[in-house]
Image (tube, rainbow, N blue to C red):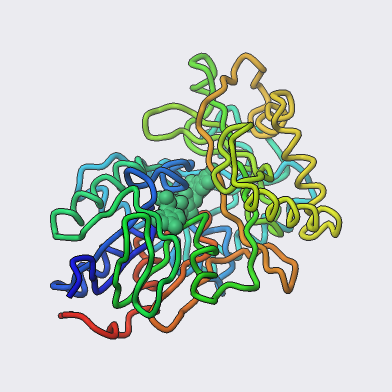
Amino acid sequence: MSHNAFDFVIVGAGIVGLTVADVLMGRFANSRIAVLDKEAKPALHASGRNSGVMHCGIYYGSDTLKARVCSVGARRMQAFALENGIAYSRSGKVILATSEEQLSTIERLLKNARDNGISAERIDQHQLHEIEPYAAIGPAAIHCPDTAVIDGLAVVEHLYRRLEKHGVRFFFNCRMTGLRGKGQINTSQGLIHYGFLYNCAGAHADTVAKSFGLAECYALVPFKGIYWKLSANANSRVRANIYPVPDVSLPFLGVHLTRVINGDVYVGPTAIPAFGRENYGKFQWTPFSEAAGIAIELMQMYMRNESNFRTLAHTELAKYWKKNFLAAARRLVPSLEGEDMIPTSKVGIRPQLVNTRTRTLEMDYIILRGEDSLHVLNAISPALTSSFAFSQIIVDTGCEIPAWGTLSG
Ligand SMILES: Cc1cc2nc3c(=O)[nH]c(=O)nc-3n(C[C@H](O)[C@H](O)[C@H](O)COP(=O)(O)OP(=O)(O)OC[C@H]3O[C@@H](n4cnc5c(N)ncnc54)[C@H](O)[C@@H]3O)c2cc1C
């Protein structure tokens, strides 16, 4: 058997790929597992560039995969954190309605909470003031006590070390470039044989899936999330997490304020349409074919105004200007002024899928099964929170015994 032959190959060393490797390792003790990533270390993309919030699951209807895995995933990640001495804080969150029109969404969120068995209650102005003294007073507010923040990079680091210790092989700087034949992929480090392949390639998962003849009805549109930070003077005006009522027709939660685990308070992220899957800077180079494909997709969405895209594009692009960003933050904490917000280099990209048949943004995770492969698409928020439960479903879905190999368990 070739030196580079494995029972399981996982493409992508983000939180989804690592937790999938962890489930496989636990279930098939003697199997040969490899994780490849095109970068030099794990979590250089979405898994290392997020808000670090463990969501409670209030945003997701009970019929969604997100609802199935969000709160369970959060509990498991907290247990993992406890076991490994990783910092997390169950600091809670308030969701603020700032207009009467948002009251129906407040009701919908509370119904989700009931359906999904999540703690959440409507609170009055007095209670809100007790929890977040500087929060805007509006027509309604919800308190979610189970929302938490975590050092997500520490989770990744511990998982990575545990996997490596138990014999999982990591190939870094190793890009999967295509499918060679049955059970064989081409990579930038040569041919790799696999029994079963899990595609957890995040912003490139659709491209990898397409090389297996899958995901033809999906296109990817990246949305850039930029963050600001509160200055030392303003930091104490946010105790935990202050969120707006989201537009439930969109997969974004809106600019919010989050006290992360080191005590800094981040404001963001935006959801600005971007022209590259890794277009973190303003003028970052993106391969022409990738930028052109995304530009066409964005143009179509703009022209057709799908999912209210025109309004989204205008309001989000405007947030490149500080005064518009500040205005979004002030809807939640009205006392904030320009000097209270300082720029940061923190930026992430959400790899959002568009269904090219229905012309809608996909709201839920998508799992596609091939003959000897499984593809995790649209692993957008809350995939960090969900990962420890989502990975189990991914493995369950993929895991009929591979075509060859030395599996046990
Ligand atoms: C701004 C922002 C804020 C967010 N906030 C939260 C939050 O507060 N809470 C929450 O739960 N979720 C949040 N999320 C979502 C969460 O971060 C992601 O859903 C999650 O990290 C996805 O993990 P992943 O492993 O699928 O992807 P990634 O972390 O992107 O990992 C994919 C990996 O695949 C590798 N790869 C890609 N193509 C190839 C290839 N061809 N060959 C080899 N390797 C390849 C990449 O290098 C990358 O390392 C946020 C996301 C963003 C962008």
